Length: 510
Image (cartoon, rainbow, N blue to C red; front, side, top):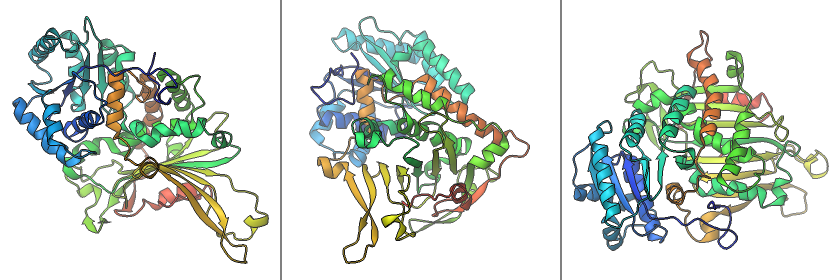
């Protein structure tokens, strides 16, 4: 019986998260220190972490268990969602260990196997969860060595693999990685992580739609004019990120995985059931119906790419993208992308999804806005042509997770003057506590064996099919679409505004 994340306790069977041994490859990296270990710690604070858990960090640097734990403790004090309790940390950290080895050294895997076998022989859990959080160039080595050393199997328990992004850099590399993964683990034991799907509001999209008839009845091209998905970041290339980002860009780094996943959740049909594959089947159908842009002209008409120039963000002067550390001075990698995404199916025909993502924008935010069609321009709607759009449903993914609905209301007084107002729901206010971090939910689901919030291999490949055509037009054409520019601290290039203006629409102000 699969864990059902969309049913409340008592309404359906829930799979219990069993104790296991978690091996983190890339354990000295930022992801482990700022996300994974704090997530496990917060699960322990909430009493959700199974007893008998062991966490083994696998990395090349020489460290003792004590040095490794001290580094993790320092990070946890800074970032833990629920603060840091010394007594609980002391208890929690006793089950954290360090295993020194290069990712390419087969002997390191043999000694890891011996260590896990000893834990099991001493009465520990036979279950194993391998978290591949290394640099992408080592994914193949880690997976192949897990198989050759027999670590991908357990005689008395289960073995699963969680693979971090990026899952390939194009369709060819993603297909290859899928083959390597599935040669090592069954698809049912493979968890391709997308932390956006672990965010509470992203999970609530299906509940919002399918548990509320008022929305689902309107969720189609008869009532919805268009949809906007925005991800804005004020950050640039701090922390040496320019070396990675200049090879990836906004389209591959964010749109291919995170934002197309959000589009598929918004656009999917009701699943036959709430099993992992039932939900993912419907998401794949959406990705298969994305209209492909097969020519350079189609890409130029529907996609805008841009780089930021010098400007001011948060009161600080910042350099332009091409002057960032580890970025090629002649780079043609986009720090901003905006797309008109069209879904060629019965429900969404004629409804554009406008998707944008950018670095060095004014604020950090991710949201989905559903823009409903206007009421007829008669009666009250004929009184004030300058009033802002009336009915917009906004789903805030981050920060301040929540949902709001914009409506029109009459201002107090004798005149019939309309005023836009907002009905607002915030998770923290409504439930009296902060939402769990995305990695908390995703790690617990992986331990419990629920893949609902993880990408299946066909999801990954279908998304790359859509993105590759755009990338080819940019980088393999003799006459590629131009690279636009925008000032750091602005909301993007004028070409992005023109993308909507040609359709008689504008970006929602955030």
